[in-house]
Structures are given as structure tokens and as C-alpha cells.
Image 1 (spheres, rainbow, N blue to C red):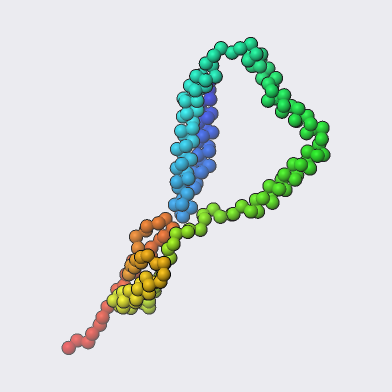
Image 2 (cartoon, rainbow, N blue to C red):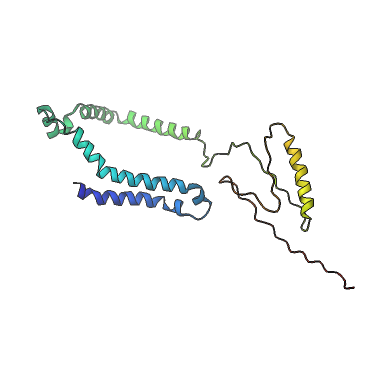
Length: 201
């Protein structure tokens, strides 16, 4: 039994993993944000396939076949649809089929209620960040001396630090800071070439 189902289960597992492969293998921002989702699915589905072939059969053998089946259990096994669950299901299904109009109206009302309820679901894949942090980008005209840039940056930093609720400030000049959170991309270093020409003599 396990040999017959091992490969089909593996194939279904691989198909489910490949469905999320474009997200995990993407080289743009989608892959950067959602790579962990693909990795979790890959590991969890492979572990699920492994446990389905090893742990689950052992537990079934220990729990379901621990005692010899009784006569009533043997009779129910011969006809599994004679159990109390299936008898209740058949009775409910019979009532629903007899009241076709009422059943269709009820299903339509449930569908309309579900559609209306989905309007209250927030459609936001990446929720807004609630980290108490903000950035100030300062750009001066090309060719401005870096000392002047540093002086202006210090003035702005002191002004911000004096605001209520500000705990700390960090400034970088000439390039962006090192990446400390996923959503932050620092500016590339600014390189300038300055050539001064003077008259001889």
C-alpha cells in the first residue's frame, strides 16, 4: 500500500511546491519579501509527505488495530454507511432534497452574505509598518562642499532631536545607511570628480 501511494503523494507534493516556486525564485522585490513563504511551504510539505509514509501508518497500526474488532464493528466495516453519522447525513440530505426551493434560497442567502462579509476584509497584502521611525533625505546642488552638507545635516539633526518623543537620530552623508530593515534601501554612494584648472605662472 505504501509503495503504491509513495510516488503519487510525492508527485502531488512537488506540484504544490512548484506552484509557489515563482514567488520564492523571483529576483525582484516579490521574491525578496516572500522567499520565506516558499521556503516554509517547501519544508513543511516535504515533512508532511515523509510523515505520511512513516509516522502516520505506525500510529494507525498502534491505535486502530490495538484490539480485535467486535462483531458490531465487523458488521459496520462490512457496510460502513450503516453508522450513526451516515444515517444522520442521509436524513439531512433527504430533507434538503425534498425542500429544493428553500434549500436554493438558503444557499443563495449564504452566498450573498459571504460576498457582503468579504467587503469588510482588509485588502492589504503587506500591512503598513507601525515602527515609529521616519527618514529625511537631504539633497543639495551638485558640487556643494561636503563640509557644508555636514553642517546643514547637523543642524537638521539637532532640530529633530529637540522634538518631543524623539529618542535617537542617525545621519549619513555621501551615501545611504547600511540596510537594517527589509523595506529600507539606502542610496548608492555619490561619487564626484572635480578638476581645478589654474593659469600657469
